[in-house]
Amino acid sequence: MKKNKFTFMFIPNAEQSIRRIRFPPYLMAVIPIVIVLIILIISYWQYNLHQQSSVEINVLSEQIETNKDSFQDSLIEKDQTIEHLQDDILELTSEVDEIKQQIDELRELEKDLLNLAEEGSFSIKDLSIDEIGHLNTGVGGREIPLSEYLETLISESDEYVNGLKNEVNILSSNLEEIKKTMQEKVDLMKVTPSIWPTDTAKVTSWYGIRKDPYTNVDSFHSGIDIDGNYQDPIYATADGTVEEIGFDNQLGIYVLITHTNELKTLYMHLDQTLVQEEESITKGQKIALMGSSGRSTGTHLHYEVLSRGYPVNPSPYLNGEALD
Image (cartoon, rainbow, N blue to C red; front, side, top):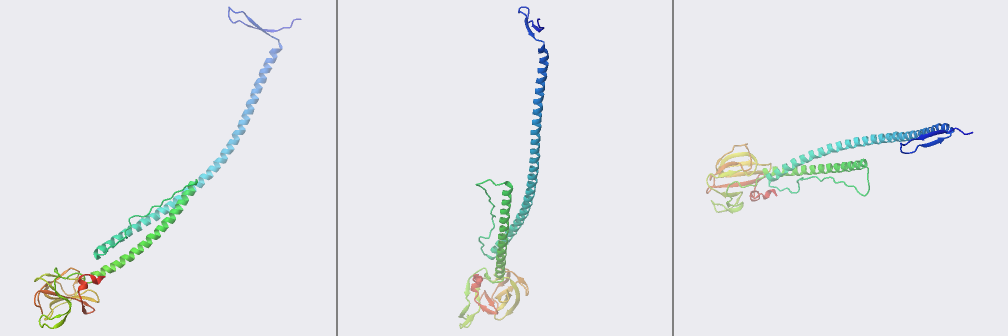
């Protein structure tokens, strides 16, 4: 008995022959089963792929959470480090501002010293503060974490700033001592006779033993006689106070000026005085006019320097040598 078969006919076109494909009936049952199996296999494969992906996703999520916690901890640590560094930088900035203020004060002190030097004819060398050394920091040879490097840099900078502050304080103290010493010298110079009392420097008779111009007998001349013209100006040779103004047959019109407890100057044979007793005067101030009053052979100034009440040689004072 002939079995039934399914026939599939393919008719390409009118010019080609018809093609027939015959299938046994059981294939019609097998084909759906095969299709279902293929679908099941594909579904199982997709399921396994999904499960595997889910596992990998979970692992990655856990790693992300772990890294996130680690990053957060690292970020917190870095924030704390940055905050600490900022505090250190603010502190260093404050210290630098303090040093700048001290340097400004030293510059003012330097100006005072230069003014004292100019006033007292002293020279000051190597006292200027032109610049402060800059901090140079370098690394090499290995990689250093930035936070560690910055902390090291701030630590070194802090030590440098502290050392610099100590040097500034020492220098300031030294300059203050120099200023004090120079001020004392300037003050001493102001009250120490050190200039000529006249515009001319022509001495007609020096300090010491000489022939008396009236008796021609050896006598002690207690000052110097300086030649000049009638009513030439007479100047105070140092700061002081007019102690006495008067007239004497020997001295003529005279002015006595007190400079210190030990030093006085005496100006004799004047034509007239230009100051009053107890008047404060300054070095170089015009105090009288030259004349020939008293025991005098002609117009001149008799000038004396008295130390502790006794006349001394005025020559060292005229040349400023008494200050050395």
